[in-house]
Amino acid sequence: MFVVALAALAIVACENKQKPRNQQEILDSVEAMKPSADRFPVIKIDSPSVNLGTITEGDTIYHTYRFSNAGNMPLAISNVVASCGCTTPSYTTNLIAPGEQGFIKVMFNSKNKEGKVHKTITVHANTNPAEQVFSFNVEVLKKQQ
Image (cartoon, rainbow, N blue to C red; front, side, top):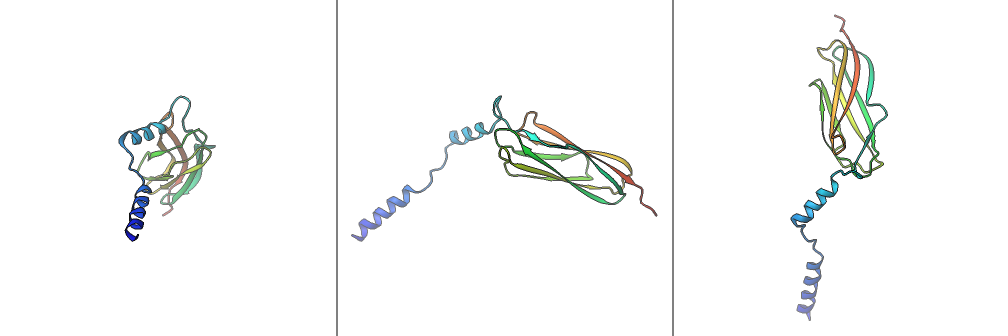
């Protein structure tokens, strides 16, 4: 009786294991995430270009761009690149469902900068087009000695 109960438990336990996905299932999942003519994510942002005012040389300033996915499939940001090393971006790394929000936060270090500064941040995502450009302007005043 004990052996029969143990065998039944082993069979039930084996049936509950999740089957590994085969290569075709993985390829189908990836294909389903690709944009098409009627399915694609859209980055919607009110202000892709902002003026951050005036700061003094050597100051660090932060700005967060908030956007939503106005499309009809998940938005995936693969990379965000700043136009120079003085600007450091961080961003939402998880998938952004339709209607949900994401962010791109930039840190600008004004060390050795002076005057009117214009910087761009290029967002690489599964959108059409695949690149979106955000920007900011800031005036950097010379540090008083």
